[in-house]
Length: 306
Image 1 (cartoon, one colour):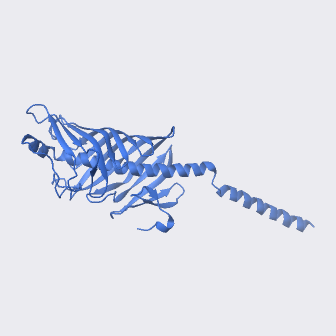
Image 2 (cartoon, helix red, strand yellow):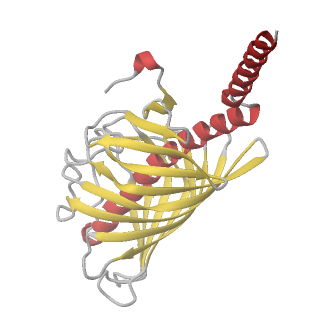
Image 3 (spheres, rainbow, N blue to C red):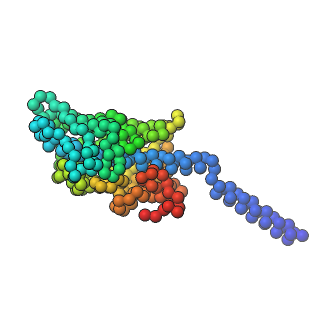
């Protein structure tokens, strides 16, 4: 009889342990909410990174050739499309230069993209960028600031300011310190402070030619995201440099991490240099998902594979 009770007791204990173990592994509503929000924050940050990189590239390109643009301007010539540019045929911004009298500095470059300036890779730019340059690059008084006014990359609209510091020893390096507001198509508003360093690997010496440009980007950002009246704070850090090449629509390599409300939620890997639309996200639980950079959505298992 004692043996029977012992067996029953042991069976009950195993059953209770199994039940408790199942409860431990079952996601709670809070876990599911965090997973959903983590995925959305990561997707939004991918959109913002794409828009930021495009906007900074436009600034870099035109600021680099400001001397040539100024000479053209004084002789009545204007910036025009050519085959070495990344814009589709007959698509390029209207560039104007504001100066005081006969002096070259200070000057303001105004880039007006109108309602639609289309790139060869399919991205669409619109709105206005103003670049203020106080003095020649190698002088002590040099200062470069950028104002974005409803500048839009596809469906992401940017407003705000950037200060750019050019390394006077190695001009291949420049730092972008930004305070920007991003508005997404669904009404999400993201206010973002960032410090990013651009390093030109190729193309810097061909000012009016975009076809050979290669850049890597390092740095990070702090942001607050507001949607439907709810605000969350997150940080983004570039762990391995992001690489941008002229003719690719997306970042081709690099790794970032995103921390939401103090918790690491995702690591995003853009790949190994191949120009494609695939990135890989690893969440805080170690789960790996592929992301479609073109559609800004996660892929199903049957869609995976580069």
